[in-house]
Structures are given as structure tokens and as C-alpha cells.
Length: 198
Image 1 (cartoon, rainbow, N blue to C red):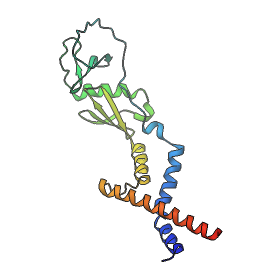
Image 2 (image 1 turned 120 degrees about the vertical axis):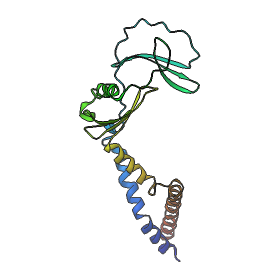
Image 3 (image 1 turned 45 degrees about the vertical axis):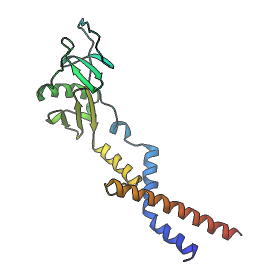
Image 4 (image 1 turned 180 degrees about the vertical axis):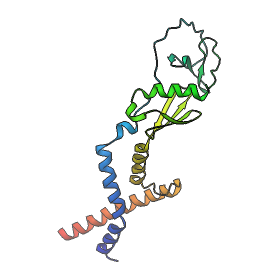
């Protein structure tokens, strides 16, 4: 098989991945819609009004804060984060859904256009009227949000990095094969260019 025909075959094989790389690369360069898709959503906090005295504990880190549900002492230990009652230093149990809903709704006030209100809720996961899913990590009092725009951008990343099957081993093989074919196409193109110039 000649260099020219091999170059032509590789060009046809790589047409779809190269088109995918070019389109997704342009989107990643411009980043439309990224702000909302990956914006951090935080629990709303209020000024502390308790005169609490904390005794030294073997914690790696401690944060005292107040939310719509009251005061919280968040501590990081060797085994991870814990949400403690500041008065007793005992673990604060996860509140019932109606209390968690207050926490969600209060946080959504930061960007009501994106989050709207809680439409449905299962334990510490809220689905909003705008189609965003928000998950609460009670031990850290941290929120994580994901909307349809996040899913679309993540899908573009999967296209760009040849993660087409969802199976890790196969996707790695596809990525490696794509890179090998791209380098081969470049080498063959360079040989043809040099041969033509000679």
C-alpha cells in the first residue's frame, strides 16, 4: 500500500474524531454556559450570636457557623468531616426533610433564576423547578449542584476525549488508538509533503 493511499485511509478514519475534537475544542475555548453549569452553591450563613466556648479537641480543622437551622460546628478528624452540636460537641443528626428543605430554599436565594424552588426532595437530594439537582453533604454542610447544562458540557468532554462507550478500559483504548492514528496521519502527511518538495 502506498503512502498516499494509507494517508487517505487514515484521514477518512479520523474524520469523525477530528470533527469532534474541533467542535468540542471550540466550545471549550469559548466556554458558553460554564458559569451556571459549574457555579459553586453554598449554604447561606448568618452572623453568629452565641457566646460559645469550645474546648480544645484533637480536630484537624474546625468551623463554627450559623444557618437557617441554627449553629453548627463542622470539624475535620482523621476519619473525615462531622457536623456537631456546638453546645455538646455531639454529632448532629440529619434533620427531617422539611427542615432540609428550608436549608435548600435558603441557599437557592443566591441565584433564584438558576435554582427556582424545590420541586421534589428525597432525603438530602433536591430537584428544583428549573431542572437542577442539588445534593447536600450534611457532615460538611456542602452543596453540589448539577443541571442539564452540566450534563451537556460533560457529554462534550466525553466526545472530546473519545470516551464514547462508558467502559473505562475500552475508552482508554479508543483514546490511545486515536492518538496513534493522529500521529501516524501527521507522519505520513509530512512524508508526502517532503517527497513532493524534493
